[in-house]
Length: 225
Image (tube, rainbow, N blue to C red; front, top):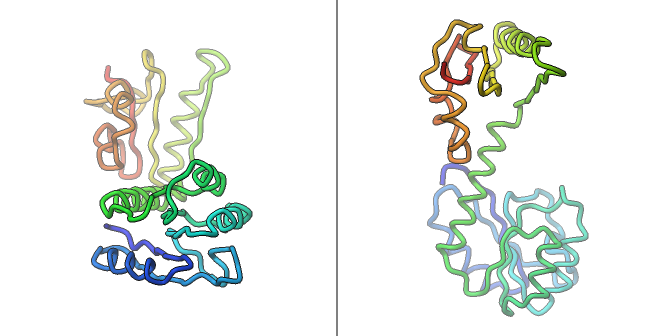
């Protein structure tokens, strides 16, 4: 894994916690700790002062009350939660887990491959969120054709790139008559038509290949004339 993911394994039975900690210990990119939950409290995060990126929660006989306690916490105080149920995967528990915002539900013993796939997905989402946390999207929309939205959008993008030295991508969504490439005297080899069908599969590197660089901080994506 590429990211250092803080994982907290908690539950009310120590052998299960130690077993999973050993299973995950050889995996790079995971900072794994265990917490034997306080038997006097249903809140699995009772006493935790720093929230982990991922909470792996073992459910036992008090599963229902534990999930209700987790669901009662404000969303911002609930980390991404994976549940491992040692008492089966009955529908009532799954519903409670969904209501508590649980990301995934595994019966015990959990398959390492399935657990790792979920953790890798969490890492990918964390990386995407971190890389885009300071990004902003501005949309300039015409009230009618010819009212100057393209001119406003182009100037706004160019000024932001030049004066703020911010990375700017100008996307012209006029599929037929978009003129941004012409306005900036660039000649795209790939454009909006080639991008949209595969947009869900593109990472930042692949997306850049569909853009035409105008200046260091400024790229344009337009239809290919």
